[in-house]
Each structure stands twice: as structure tokens, then as C-alpha cells.
Length: 380
Image 1 (cartoon, rainbow, N blue to C red):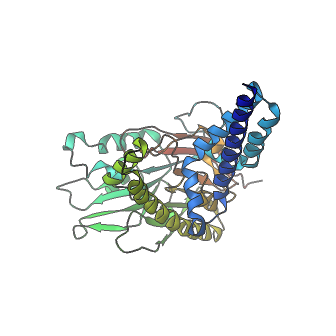
Image 2 (cartoon, rainbow, N blue to C red; image 1 turned 90 degrees about the horizontal axis):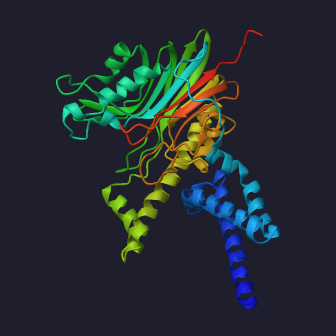
Image 3 (cartoon, rainbow, N blue to C red; image 1 turned 180 degrees about the horizontal axis):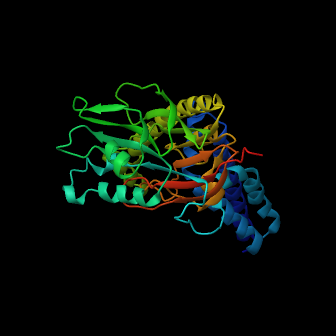
């Protein structure tokens, strides 16, 4: 019996060490470019699981066996703390207030999934009305949308830009016009709406590869907020481009079916391609932001998790609004996993983050994110 306990302890110790090493390797995604280290990037998808396992080992050794071995997991979590605090927001504060504080700036970002207008549902079941009513209630000063859809045939669908300008009171906007459908009758891309004047704009298109879509431009708008120029960025980085077949393959992997190898090969190929594209796009976004002499706010669908090269590259020294004022994981993408936070609002250090919330709504495959900021006092 003693020999069995000794053998079991060795197995547990080895498993603990392996889990800690994999966890630390996943943490290296912050600085390892997926163009060379794409295999390590895949560990980012299971970072929450690795964190849970490492934390579980820590509790096991601390309370049930040997406190000395708990130091393995504790050391790993301390070393990877920057990843942990990017993944989980620890701020337990007051509930989100619908009323804006006086003098604050409210920013909203949302991948609206083309307003649900291509679902082939009956007109009275579309989510457009509910989505625009939600936007009206939030009273944001600046709204950034990804997968924004515009129709130039009023007999079929409403003109979304005109509606938002007139009915929601956002007179200023800048639209990327990334994709055109049916001879220009429909357009889609990223867009910035503002209640404050837009004084300058810029569009940076990402390099496109033949037959691969699901990336939209980086657009920039200089907004005059009571005499102070703020630079607003929004973008939609490369998607993995999962189709129904890929979601089926994921189910095959989950169920460990006989065709699991081929299913895994297909999924990994798409993940690798997307990681490599996003890394280059993130570096381009960072270079454009570094050239700005204004206070910056960037919003968007980065299509990558907080412990990724994409996130770390774009964030730099900026503030992640959800991490500053949110609590929990902050899931923003409704498919695949309950841990996917891939939509962000980030601001220059000069801003004070007042509050932030991810709203769980059933209208798009993404949840909207809203943050309130206090601008720095430049009168002193």
C-alpha cells in the first residue's frame, strides 16, 4: 500500500509539472509571433482550462497533501500573472449605471452580424428593430460597429446609416465600404458613428489573400469633443472562417469519433492561417496607433483571446476597459466556448475608466461592449 501511494504521488507530481509548463508556455503567446510559433498559439485556446488545472493542483497540495509541492503551481501563476489578469477581471464594483456621469464619454462597440438581415427570416422576426432600440437606450456618444450592413434599395431594407443619423441622433460617421454585394446594392464593413464632429478620417486596408474573406479595414476618426481631439479606431481582424462543417468537426473532436484525426487536421489548418494573418494585422494596427499624437480609443472585434499575441500587440500600454472595471471572464462571442472574449474597448492611459459592461443579448453572434470614460482635465 505504501508503494502504491508513493507511485501515485509521483504520477500526480509529474502531471502537476507538465500542467504548469503548458500553462507557462501558453502565457508566452504575449510575445511569440504566431508566424513562427503558431503551435504555441493553439494553447491560448485552452488557457482557461490550463489555469483551472494549475489552480486545482495548488489547492490540492495546499490543503490535502504537501504544501511544498503547492509552490509549483503558485510559482507558475505568479509568473503568468499578466496573462491571468488579462483573462479575468477582478473588479467587483457598483452595477453599470445607465445614466452617464456629467462630462463623461460613452463608447459602444458591437459586431452586429449584418443586423441579422441575411438570416432569411420573416421581416417581423428580424432583430434589427430590437438592436436599434437597444442602441437608442444606451445613449452612447460614439458607436463602433463591425460587420455593419448598409442597403441602397429602400424597397427591400432600410438605409441603416440614414436611420441611425436621424432617429438615433448620430449626425457624423465614417464607413469603410469594405465589401460590395449585388453591384453595390448592399455594402458591409466597419463604421464609426459620433455625436461629436468628426474632423479627419483615415482608412487602412489589410492585405487580402485570394478566396479568403472575413477581415475588415482599420478605420480612424478624429473626433472633436468640446475642443479636445480624440482619435477613435475600430477594426475587425481576420476570422477563423468556421463553416457548418467546421462546427461539425468540433463536435466530432469532442465526442472522440473515429474520424477525429481528419477533423482535427482541418480545424488546426484554419486556426493556424487565422493566427498568422491576425499577427500581421495587429502589428499594422499598433504601428498606426503609435503614430498618433492624440488620446486614443480603439474598439473592435479582434477575433482573438486576451492571452494572445494579437491582444498584447494592440493593447501595449493602453487600458482594457473591461479589465479595469468589469468582473469575470466577459464573454463576447456566443459560439464554441463560454470563455471567448474577443471584442474590446481600449483607451490611452490619460483616460479614467468609469465603468464597463458586456451586455448579453441574443441578437448577434457577438455581445456589445459599453464603457464610460472621463477625459483628462487639461485646464490645470
